Length: 378
Image (tube, rainbow, N blue to C red):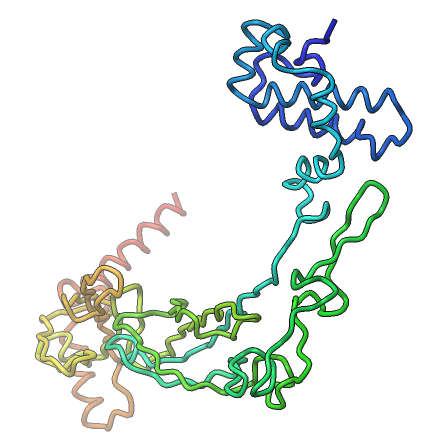
């Protein structure tokens, strides 16, 4: 009496296709005749495993088996037929485990094409260039397709020939026990072709070192750490494969006036204390030129003014940022005697630092200091 197929593979009757396949691979590796030469029990066990897998891995056959058991297949199969279907054991073994061990078990490969390497170029920009956008010409040292042999590596009038050792596959197979191990062909070094007359320009490599000039469009609004990708502008590929890509890594240099924060600009604007007190009009710089700006009277140092639409237009969503101007009230230096007397007279008119209305911040500060020391003495 035949053993239940699910028991043969050591799985439950609810196992999915992946679990069935995994169980089969595990048992097939253990009992395969090539690994157990002369062991009749192992060969018999392997036949049972293979038969169970062929039924359970096929959804239609599995459904019939679940309904009718072994009787569903007794009229359509025999031991002789099964034995005949099993005789190519080594090739079956390769098919079973090919997706696990790749090309170890003797799969056939064609000549490998290798994509060229990607390159990176670090590009420094001024803030004005980054904000407005610009075309930049850069020079890239790279490997490019040889102009003499057009990348074949063979001299003019000749072509590479198919390797007779691997027949153009680039791989050969060596038998090691029950494994058929695949390795690169030593005759052609895995290329599948042999160049009898190498190109004198590239020495048979198909690529030459060259400094390549590229015109790069820098989009308006780009910022530090942004990257621009240029397809197929990297190193040339091998054996006709496509070239790699070129990445332009952007760095925006420090600006003497403005600091950038996302799409906004920041700058400090110094004014004297007379303008801070009385107000007035000054010129404020923007990336588009100077603009007139009114300073309100009694403006304090550190006051931040926002000028809308004078920042940077986003390279991603097109939104225009703003300009933030921080007012710095500057203390006058290098005063002459007349100026000092005027300031002294002005200071006397304010009264003491703890005076009433001319210095509200000073008044609040000293009142806080007084309360602090009063609390300490209680």
